Image (cartoon, rainbow, N blue to C red; front, side, top):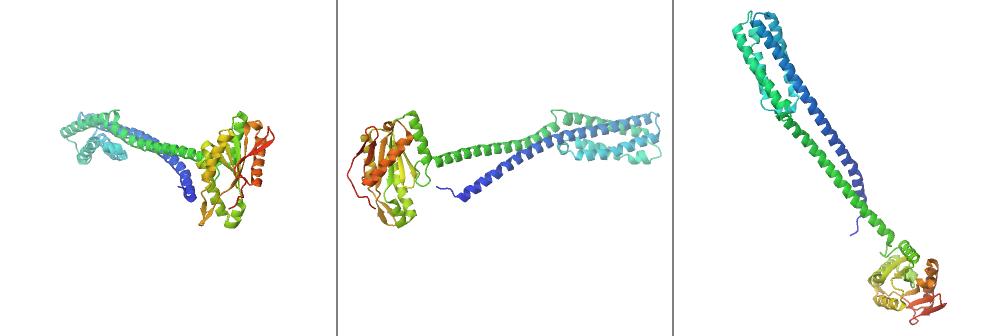
Length: 384
């Protein structure tokens, strides 16, 4: 099935655009992964530091409260310490709310909020009362101290430790981002693999087009010349035959070039069915064709050529009109020309035109060593 040129161009454009898009996707997911890792690390440090600051403030307040109970610190100093602790909690809570992973850690947030409520609950008793009940204050200090210990334990177990719930959730978040990066890399690799496959296919198609004639599908002139040069350089035995389609111009003038093309395609199919099986057939241009026969035995080549002529007996039907193909053929053995490619081509070409002028349908052989021209077959009047 032939590919629509417009579709091919569209696919090529999509492929060109897709590469940079995927590369950009890989870059963005990489940046996202790195920023996520950096963000988690920085937020964890901020969270721990915020809790440490709170712990210090709680410790300072507990110390001042104990000093007040023992009569070593005034009520006003205790109230100042309390206010500092009370004001520390909102700042700590605000910092912790920015840490999404911390919000997922069970228990720690509740402990901090419980301690905050415990501190707020005694504001009137400490700040607004003229005197502070030391027994009640001692009980409040003991409860706050237990809460402080609980918060510290949870920070160590749930946040700071490498095996903590915080670390597990952080790793899970980073892993999700890493998975996205791996998926993008995998897709990009698939794109590159597909691109390489397409490039190989394109190269194969280009090589095929260089080696074959676009109309007939036979080998191109360039391929034939390279093959001839190689065989002559290596002195590989072969025979060379050249064919000319008789009265081809009349067909073009009478029925149009489309009919001429159909006739050339029909002839090419006959070549493929017969002579291509025992050599290389190519189109030199126009209505001239060439066969590099594997054998250099004229008798064997005559037999193969006879099969080809039998195939030509079936007409080519164009616009409901039967057209019969007649060709003129000249041949030569490469060894007879000492594998001299230019001389071989010139003499075989002359032989072909001799066959055309003599109107013979068999191969017109020319032997340069004997200086004799050999031909087989009867004279015929070729006509369509």
